[in-house]
Image 1 (cartoon, rainbow, N blue to C red):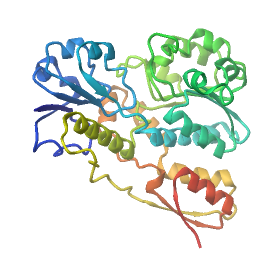
Image 2: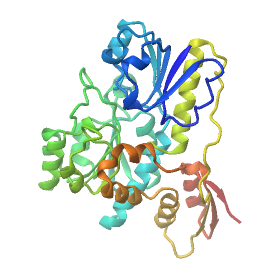
Image 3: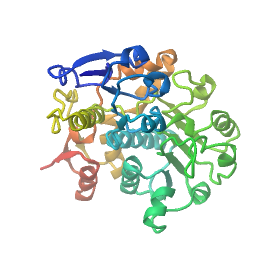
Length: 376
C-alpha cells in the first residue's frame, strides 16, 4: 500500500509508516508520476485532484484535510471509482476566531460600536453558524442567508440575499465555491451585488477567493459602495491582485482557518477516513503534540472597563489579526510560504482567563466563546 501525503499537513508523520509506503511531498510536487501507483492521497487545496493528476493511476481514495473540496474533480472521481472525503467543520472555530479579531479591529479603527449593528452572514454551515453565535454574543443583529438550508428547513430563520444587501452593516461570506447549478457562488459578489448595497457595508471574505469578483470589488471600494474590504481569500492565489491588496482594510494570506486546533482536527478526520476505507484499525486515531500557546493564561481586571473592552482584550490576546496583515503586506511575494510556515495559533478553548472585577454576565459570554474562566 502506498499513501502520498502533502508535507504541510501537521501531526501525521509516523501514523501510516508501519502499514504502508508513505511519500511526503509539497502539494506542487504531487504529480501524476508520483501518484500513479498510490492507493491514497492526503492533500490540501493546492493539489488539483483532476484527470490530469489521476488518469491511469491506482488511487482509490482521496482525503483532503480541508473544509473546501473544489480542488477535487468530484465528477471525474465518481466516474472512475475514486472515493473522496473532506473535513467539514474542522477549522470552523479558527475562522470564528479570525472573524472575532476582525470585528474588534474594525470597531477600534473605525470608532464604531458593534452592538446594534446588523451582520449579514451568507452561508450558514459549520462556520457561518459559529459566526452567527459570535455576533449575537457581541450584541449584533444577525441576518442569515443560506438557500440550500432554507429549502431544507423552511424560511423562518433565513432571509434572501436582497435583504442582506439592503440592511446589513457588515457582510461576511462563508459559502463553498460552486461553479454551476442552482447555488452557484462563483463571483457571487459581482458588479450587480455591489450596486444593490444600500448601507455601504464592510465586506469580509474568508471562504474562497473566486466568490468575490476582483474587478468588481476594486471598483466598489473606489466608489465607496463598501466602507472597507477584509480579504483572506483571493482570486488566482498565490498570484494575487496587488492593487486589490492595497485597497483592502485588512489583508491576510488565506490563513483564517489556520489555527493548530483546526489543522489537527482536519488531519484527524483524514486519517480516520482512510482507516475506515482501507480497514487500517486507526478509526479512533488522534494527533499528538499540538503546541500549547506561549501564554495560555490571560489576566483581565475588569475594573473601569466596559464589557466590549473586556471581550476585545480576551479575543486580541489570543489572536491579533493586525500582525498577520502587517506581515503579509511586507512579504506579498511569499504567499505560499506564509501559509506553509504559519506560526502557532490556538483557539479560545486553549486559554484560561483569570478574571477580576468582571460581572457574571460578561463571564458567561467569555465562557460561551470557549474560554476557560477562573475568578475569585
